[in-house]
Amino acid sequence: MSAGKWLEVALVHYPVNNRRGELIGSAVTNLDIHDIARTGRTYGIARFHLVTPYADQQSLVAELLAHWLTGRGGELNPARKEALQLVRVVPDLAGLYAKITARQGEAPLVVATSARAQGREIAYQDLKKRLVAKGPTLILLGTAWGLAPEALAEVDAFLPPISGGGDYNHLPVRSAAAIIMDRLLAVT
Image 1 (tube, helix red, strand yellow):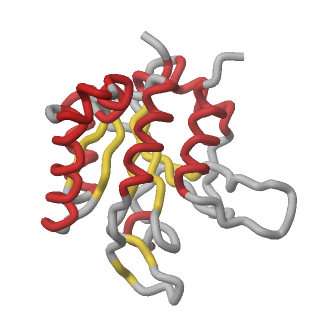
Image 2: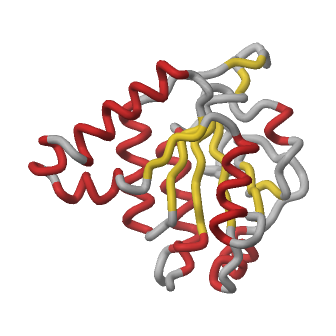
């Protein structure tokens, strides 16, 4: 079993902050679903979760997935269908943690991402060793202006911020997901 089979990624749409630091729920976007699922499939992750409590957003994702998994989209593009089979929608983080624990037989190490240093960091190399040793791990990616404090309070560790060396640091979440998966799972 590859190290990626121990890694799950969650794109969190609630609880997140807006630019003023207020608690909000952000909208699910088609591009994020497709691109992160395709990256996840490339690197062999176990699952890609979308966290949103909103019924309309859950319905939107269900409709999109139906097109690709059971509809014409999957017939025309089997590779996209294969990637989107990784996607699961969950209403909240607590339920996600419980599902992973039940499936894996132990609680995952929950690791958050942030554009700013948060302390309690785990180096990429150390997390990679955990994955090779077959330790269930969940990476949380925030949307909008990042994970809300109540989400951050529940995590075990943080990955170091991704930096390009300059003072600008506001990557699209799809790009951050790809960089993180590459750093953790690339074959060198």
